[in-house]
Length: 176
Image (cartoon, rainbow, N blue to C red; front, side):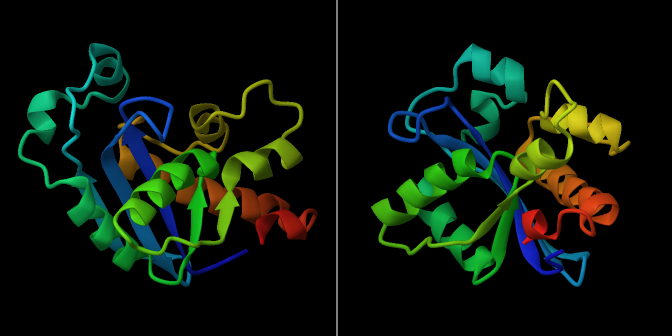
């Protein structure tokens, strides 16, 4: 298991990196298996957040009204990530948004990543759903603020560590 990484999650206005926007970034830096630094930021989108997204995330237009813009936040987030490996649940969704915005503003975002969804598909084939919520329930990981970026990132880090604890010996390659 990787002991040093950045677990992260985004909340967005929709599913398309090309047409939708980031509204929240949450991340935690883990060194030797312990959280040493946190990143939590709302991002001000160009367009209003739809009621559907507010219902899912709890993030309102009022909450992002005074947030910094994407360019400033992406620079800080890229700096926060440094050379760390990224960990995420369905990581490519979030990675595509980050890479698109980082490139748009001239920041490099070439990262290696570990996907807890990919791991779960390998070790929990019997589960009908491998959503973060289902997996957290299985491992008794409490996530009182699901669909909020930092809390989902923290739950993902805990999930990664739990799955590694139980399955790394059996499936060492999927945890690298």
